[in-house]
Image (cartoon, rainbow, N blue to C red; front, side, top):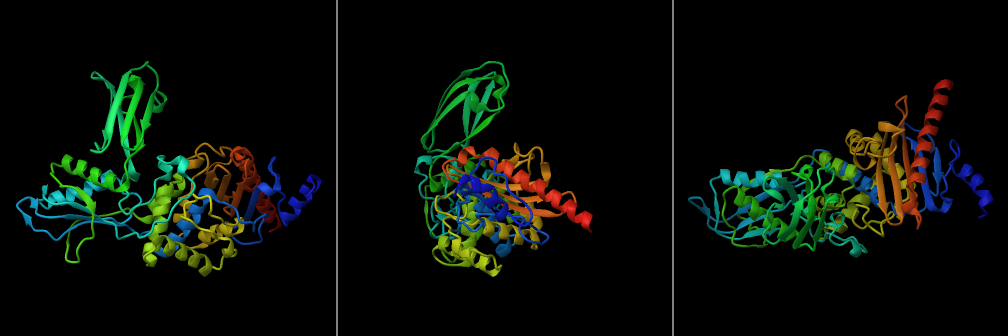
Length: 463
């Protein structure tokens, strides 16, 4: 199509209300769809039925389905079980850790769980710690991210996801010199450091002053540490899931004065095992806020698998896909044939949606019983999450989920006009220029928001 025809195409595609200025993007690089939440025809539609890679805006579908099928107060349970007797302060046999796939399970939660075990009077674990991983079967994958191995954003989901499988390096520069400690002190991770006192300057980010080398089992830290970096922290992704969970358990158990276990392995708790301690997570709505505001892939994939577990079936990932597709069909949303899923997080080269499908999910969410929880989970422009430094001119009336891959830039969410009416907006760039398209994408979304303001003022004047 000749470039001269593009303006006419865009005006036609965006009838009846708004024409799009693509701010330098080509029409075949972007898909756009926007419609009023309170009802009415779409205000913008460009390539809205073309399957595109949504990157992390796919998390909106997973979170929407989870709210509808599980409810905002759904909670994950983690438990410690045993069939062994207790003699004095010793558990005379194996302890089973039944993982629930809690996406927010951190060291504070693990400490609370272990403290409950200590309150029972148990101090010594004479047997093994066995990880019961029955909650998830097949967890699926995220293909073609081998080049990012070891980075936190590609950490996979797990029934025993603990602290997002990261340990913290805590830096000190006081009267005892410059040094670093690993928190928790994992037995299988070797920490070496060559640090010296650094210049007297501000320390907004300790990683400006230190170099961290990490192969998952050996962490080496070098650099010059200013006094202002005292107490600063940086995380490292280490070990595999089982090793991390087991070593984390042992370190925190020792910190509570406990001894054991003999070793860590996998095992299924026998039917007669009794519950010795348990932990219930905060509600799903809290996890969803973390997932969307900070675009956490690991947590989103874990939530996706939770959908599958609750739906039933040995293959948890396949059951999760069925559950999400069923929800889309049940709600009467179009274009389900274009939907392609891999792990529900958008950390995928293969996942596909259409802008219209994603937009209709936004409309359904905003009109549904859990609208408050869903919308509250989205980053607020110029305020928090992945939008903290974007859209300062529009401010908190704009709430959008972001998405980024090497060849994808995406935004999807809501604009609220001054009269309270809302516009659902989806804008997704796919192509080799995606990484440089951020400013143009933001400008397209800003135009839609301002154009909707104009439309709402016209409507008010006509009334």
